[in-house]
Image (cartoon, rainbow, N blue to C red; front, side, top):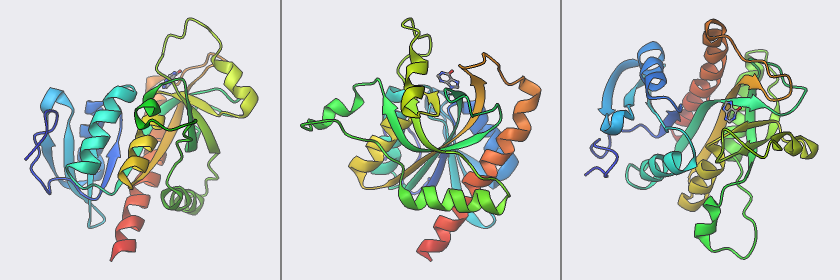
Length: 240
Ligand code: HPA
């Protein structure tokens, strides 16, 4: 049946699951963008919903914050629920001075200060990368919307309040932005032989110290969601 963290029955999730960090955001996405959305998980308040978008089954479930949390939920979606595609829809803090608030970025790869990949016992450093099909589909969907999204590395960090104060050093290697989930998501997808992609909206800048005012978040968030849902539709078409 379910798992210790997910009470949904087999078959309750669509092949593509969108994952925001915040459970209330998951509910908002389900109720705003999906038709006939039903709550399929509420263990620990980590809401999971399944409905349809343009006639295509799509699920949305929260990841919680950080790599241990998304590590658990994405593993179970891939392995217990046979989900094929997970698209994280999150926020990130700009490291690159070229990024502006509200920019939507695609995480081609994920650097990390986490030891998550240690579990695989590999004799070197694993490079967590996005699934190329999801990535190129997201770029194509964005271009159709008239947007050329920045594509590159993010930093997936275990630490939000970094006492070392050296996060911007990653900018020397072209890292675009910091968030806290993608490296674990990409590792889990690789291990499961499934697909994952992170799409992030820049909510703050470590370069300038600016933050997106809450009122402005809604419109930017819509752009990110249109890309993610467009990818979900394209992926359903691929299988048909
Ligand atoms: N740090 C880590 N994660 C984040 C940030 C940040 O500044 N902004 C959005 N997610």
